[in-house]
Image (cartoon, rainbow, N blue to C red):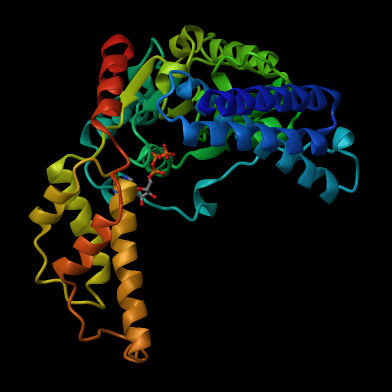
Length: 387
Ligand SMILES: Nc1ncnc2c1ncn2[C@@H]1O[C@H](COP(=O)(O)OP(=O)(O)OP(=O)(O)O)[C@@H](O)[C@H]1O
């Protein structure tokens, strides 16, 4: 009985997925989305019923891939309808550039807790060459890969780096690059690099930041959106940065990934520096709690808290988890005060933060990072790390 259900879910899911890809290739995006969703539903059901099946990872990857594709197509269709045309003739957007004075995130290295080794690697690879280019007659690396578990600061440190050197930031994510430029994404990779070279030639440093870079550069078995052409263009552009006329440009490509093992070797080679952004250890977790709790202390008294204990309780929690735990504590207390009609006046209130406030929230959450994940990064780092 069980195997019949399993069989049905996989067969039907595969049939829907095949249909979705076919429709996608024909440009019938709306219908394609419907079938991608149907396939996801069946594969998810299969995974919930048989989580320990040997093919579980394979189906998880497929689901992630179809979700990304849906996101891409939906964004593409939104844009097409906003432009009043059909998805095929959507007008091309220009490359979005975040100049330093326009960015809302103004954090610099000192505003981020720890990440000392990462800061050091980025100073060496980026900041010093930008500040003293004359000391580097042989040029400097152009590609830097940041890898490590989710929510541990890859994006934050990249933005802080851009702020440190007043760099223009071009933010590229798989969903935007593929949706904006569906069908001719390679031309637009070229556009990003042209724009970046143009700005860098005028003396302003540029960082092209590609989040979830594995989404752009993993091998797909059934490519529908010209991913291969786009990848080749990207590799060519990266090689171009090494050529003589570009070698002294203050232009850097920073890729971030949680799954470095999905990247193919040609791509890895283009990123000369590969830097591990680690999860916070106990001392760093303590510093993160302090950092976020300090922000609350203008309103709530925090003198009873045992930060060592909080750090000890949160092994495996990411920096983002810790930020979000403190936020949830804030929300719980604000709710409590509102319900007691106690929070009306502005300024400080007579409410101490207690360990119990934190324990409650921590107990309801699972850590995002498992020892198995850390082991996988360690193995990858041993093979490919380069700082
Ligand atoms: N060093 C740090 N100091 C203070 N807060 C941090 C630090 N690192 C991360 N955070 C917090 O964690 C959140 C997530 O960080 P960020 O988005 O940089 O992680 P990431 O590694 O890029 O995650 P993902 O791989 O999921 O994109 C930030 O918004 C910030 O609140």
